[in-house]
Amino acid sequence: MNRPLLLIATIIASLSGLPARAQDSAEALAQPEEGEAAELDLQSIRRFGERYGRFEVNIVWADPTRGRPEGLWPRRVRYAIDCEDETMTLAAVGVFDGAGQVQRTLVVPPGAADAVKPARGSTEHKWLRKACLF
Image 1 (tube, helix red, strand yellow):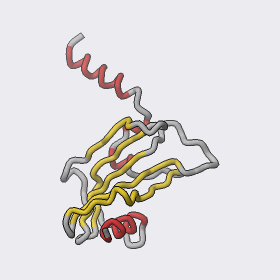
Image 2 (image 1 turned 180 degrees about the vertical axis):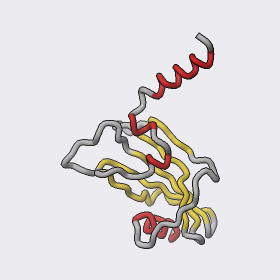
Image 3 (image 1 turned 30 degrees about the horizontal axis):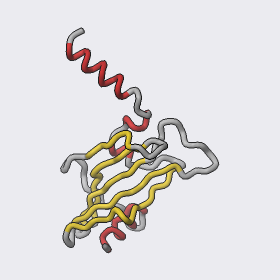
Image 4 (image 1 turned 60 degrees about the horizontal axis):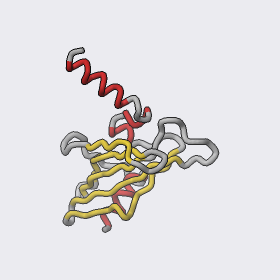
C-alpha cells in the first residue's frame, strides 16, 4: 500500500471514533441546536486594555423532556471581542464528551473569521456588553 493511501486510511479511521457533530466546522459547532442552551461564563471574561478582550460561552443540552441526541456534545466557544466597535469574532470551539473530557478543539486562526456586530438586544449582544463592562 502506498504511503498517501495509508495516511488517508489512518485519518478516516481516527475520525470515525469522533461523534458526528464533533466533525463539523467551528462555525457550525458554535451555534446551539434546538434543545440546547448557551450561557456566558463570567469567569472566562478577560480584558486586554480598554478596547479588546475575550469571553467563553458554554453550550449544553437543556431539554429535560428529551434525551440528548446521539452525536450532540457539550461545547465551549471562545470569542475575541472589540468593545469599541462592539464586534465579536469566533476564536475557538472545544467539544467535550459526556464525562467532560476534551474530544476535539478547533482553533480559528486570526483573520480566518469575520468580526460580527450582534443585533441590539440579542443574546450575543448582551454577552458582549457584559464582557465590555469588566
